[in-house]
Length: 466
Image 1 (tube, rainbow, N blue to C red):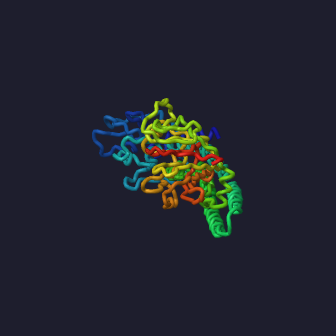
Image 2 (cartoon, rainbow, N blue to C red):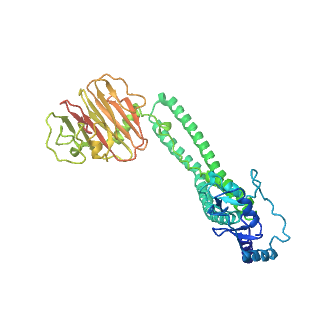
Image 3 (cartoon, one colour):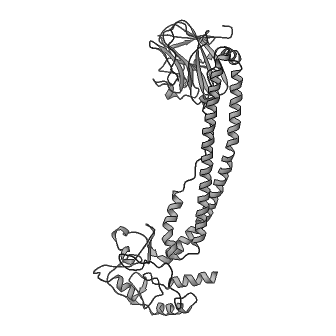
C-alpha cells in the first residue's frame, strides 16, 4: 500500500498541469512551475505583455521558457515504472472545456469547479485559489476522510435522539392518564349539569392526543430519514475512494452541497395544552377547593408604596395622600400604589379572599416575586396578572373570555391560583359567581398583588374567622 501510494505521488509530480500527462520536453517558467513546452506555448498563444502561469496566475514578464533536462529524464524513467503512461490505457472520464477545447486541468477551490487554463484567466475567477486536479483530488480525498469521524458521531447522536424520541409515546400515555385522573377527581364533585362539559373535555383530549401522536410519528420518521441520509453520505465517501481524480472532483461540489443542506430534525416536546383538559371549578366544587386550599395571606410592608398605610396585623391597607418616610428598599413600589402579599407561591393550588367593599378603584391578583427595581418603578404594571375595577367596570388583560359585566356593589373577591395549570380565577363572593380566568405559564415564585386606588377606603384581606 505504501509503495503504491509513493508511486502514485511520484507519477503526479511528473505530470503537466495542463495536459495531465507525463511531461514532454519540460520547461520551467519564471514562477518555478513546470509544463510541457507545447502546452505552455499553446496557453500563451496570442498573449502580449502579460503571461500568466496556468497554476498560480503569476504574471511572467516575458514568455521565457527554461528547458529542464533533469526533469525530462525523470519523466522518461517514470514512464517505465508501473503505472506510467507507457502502455497505459487512456484515462476514463477525461473531460475537456467545451468553449476552449482544452483539458480541464485546474481546480478552483473557491467555486469547486474544474477549469481549463484559459477559463482560469477569466475575470470571474480572479484571485481564486487554483491547483492541479491531481493535487486538488489528493487534498479533497484527505478532507473527505476527515468527514468520516464527524458523520459517524452525528449518526450516533441521531440514533440516540431517535431512541429518546421513541420513548415519547409512553410519556404521552402517562401524561394522558394523569390528566384523566385529575379530570375524573374534579368531576366527582359536580352535578349532572356538568356531564356535557365532561364529554366535551374528553373529546378535546382525544383530539389533542391524536394530534400529538401524529406529530410524534412524523418527527420520528424525520429522524429515520435523516439517519438514512447520513448513512448514504458515508456510503458515498467510501465509493469516492475507488473513483478517479476527475470523477471525484466533478462530484465533490454536489456532495458538499448535500452535506451542508442536511439539517437534523428538532426534538418534539410532548406538552398538552392546559385548557384542553381543564375547566373552571364551579359551585360545590369551588366550596371544596376553598376549604382545602385556603391561605392565610398577609401584606409585605417592605413592598408597599410610600402612600400606602399597612395595618399592624398586615391584613389591611389604605391610600394616604401624605407620603410616609420609609426605607429605600429595592422591593418597594415607587410609582403605582401597590403592595405585595405573603407567602410566596411556587406550586400547588391556593385560595384567598379580599374585602374590597365599595372602593371605586382597585386591582388584585398575583405578581412575580423577583420583579426588578426598574419594573417596580415603571408606570405600566409588568409581570403581574390582575383583575381591575375602574369607572369602566371590570378589566382583566389576557382573560378569555372577558370578565362578566357585574353590577358594582359592596363585595368580597375570591382569588384561586392553580400554579401547575397556569390559571388565576376570580369569583364574586359569597355567591361564588365566576368573574373570569387568566391563563399563562408560571415559572417563577408568585406573591399576592394589591393595587390600592387613590381613595381613602381600605382593602382588607379576609381571615379564616371572617
